[in-house]
Amino acid sequence: MTISGMTGFARVEGEHAGQRWIWEIKSVNGRGLDLKLRTPPGFDGLEPAARAAANAKFKRGSLQASLNVARDAAAAASIKVDLDLAERLIAAGETFGKRVAKPRWDGLLAVRGVVQSEDAAPQSEEERAAFEAALLAGFNAALQTLAQARQAEGRTLAAFFAESADRMEALIAAARASAAAAPAAALERIKQRLEGLAPELKLDPQRLAQEAAIAAARADVQEELERLTAHTTELRSLIIKPEPAGRRLDFLSQELTREANTLCSKSNDLELTRIGLDLKTVVDQIKEQAANVE
Image (tube, rainbow, N blue to C red):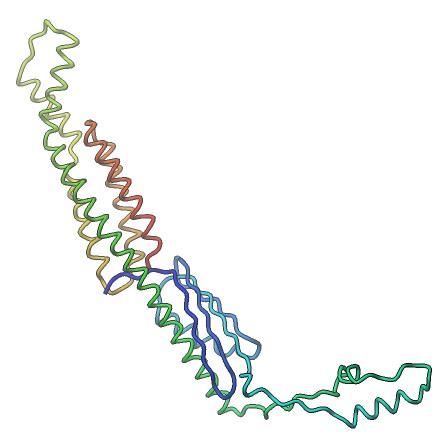
């Protein structure tokens, strides 16, 4: 199992008792779970069950679902022409003699009530319940298709996070090597600075070592590197857990940003600063993609 994304699309269609239906669901990023449901008039009763199904399937994402229902063309209602009404209309027109034109057949058909649809009898409660059950089954099938699309996006995101973790581990290792050389580099910088200011001054090796130790302590980044290592391990763990990890990834990216910033602020070495900036770039990319995770 891997993490899931939040974007996807699903379309499922079916037929029940001569009526065709189509469910379409679109999902985009969202801080929580939000379902906007659009159904034809008379189908509002589907909403509670549809919301419950969406809540059971997803934890985050903005979902837009629409239902279209139409009578199957093969089962369309037959048409009936009320000939008695048409004859009465013709007879009524004859009373006007030549003052008005004789009615045309297409005009008669346009009169309300002349053409009638022989619709089937109204659905019983049992038939209505069966139809709604079929619609809800279709909605659940659409949710499953949407989940598969979101999981496909999740696999792409998981590969990205795994690659980012590899890059972070390499940069952390480089930062450790650079930090290990910091005391000797600090001693050399202090020595060169003092020699430049007062070449004739005799330097006390013990005092130089003390100053170098103080400078190295101020620039010590071992705690930041340890925390960055722990956060990288947590990143690898989150992308393989079955439960939604989006919120945890949001929080983790904030912690990674804090440690990378502290590393750069403590650094008094150009190489370590460069490594810190590269770390911040990777962390920013993780933060950006974490917003796409359920």
